Image (tube, rainbow, N blue to C red):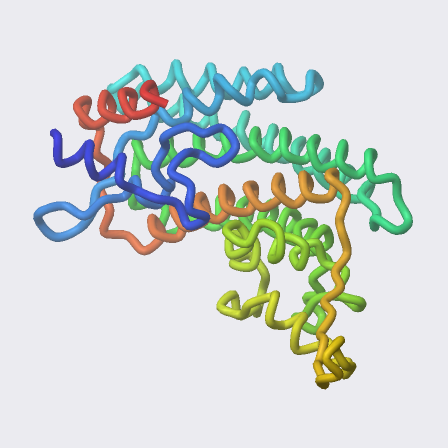
Length: 314
């Protein structure tokens, strides 16, 4: 037991955080809930405590118009999860699938509308943009929670079915596309030419000089970008040296670096979208790993209790 606990606590996220990002919960990456066994193959740990912990946080921020459906799906999942008889669980899973699909479609409609309300910082109101991103954050967190309910129920019934699944992949690809696109817009990275927009206006240059420890957690999310590049050096290389003389009449060369200072609202939007990107990527990796097969469902009560202890120690 102690070995397993140490493994969970020792897991570290791709963005350097041990907790579940902004919620600061001690939850392993979703794909790391699949763990190799002593024999051939891997086990997916019963991660119901994870879903319960996330719901307890996100339920407070979900918009009133979808909160009832969100809670209905969670309550139905929780009630269905209490049964062990397959003949009882199967029809309940079918109903859960219907409820989940309906809510996901409603959330997609809402997120699409919010996405259209977002505008460029030069043409839109920064406070309205931040409100849009925060609403997208709340809807996306609910979206991910529903996906996890869906994945959990499907895995507990017939984990092999993931090898033929396309629906969950499509749901995940949809939200990943929306959030990634918004992230690129906020940090002003062009996917058309895989480079930053003109005039070095990206807020990432500001972070490179003022919060360099965090910068890699942002650049890792940029498509076709070599995150080993140093943004400071990139700006230095673009600078034009200026020759002059010092007070001792010795020739000197001066290099000036210029970058834009973003507003606090921009930095907050970038942080929110960064966290969402990592969350969605983690779910996507879980689904893709299950699609490969050779994974069995592990309903061990000891592991469930271990997850509960891990989360409660946050």
